[in-house]
Amino acid sequence: MHVKFSKKEIEFINKHEVCRLATCFNDRPHVVPVCYIFLNNSFYIATDYNTRKFRNISRNKNVALVIDVYKPNKAVMVEGVAEIIEHGQEFKEIYKLFYDRFEWVRREPWDEGEAPFIKVNIIKKVSWGL
Image (cartoon, rainbow, N blue to C red; front, side, top):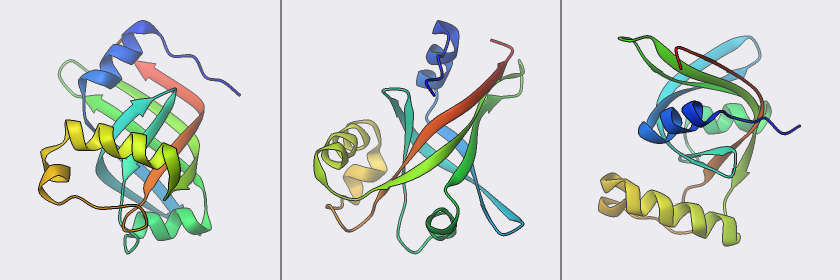
């Protein structure tokens, strides 16, 4: 399923760099703020192997995320299926985008196999205030 974003939604997504990612294991939700890159209709999020979100996704690939501001109240929320990207051309392309955008990546760089990316393949989206 291909979810289409409006021009205003894409502008809002690209204007921000932090979202809240929700994962779940059994019946326990887990929500954390994370930096993201939006590319080719997918969200990419850097993580480490020893995080709760990585462990949760390893067991349950269903995720949700929201990018929002309060005043004025605007948001984009998506539901999707997570995929782990650890190696290869896609990893290299996403890493370069993270490296160029985020100072914390340049300060503490990593290589393939040291820390993966979470790719969120979107199945549903909702927005408001845009």
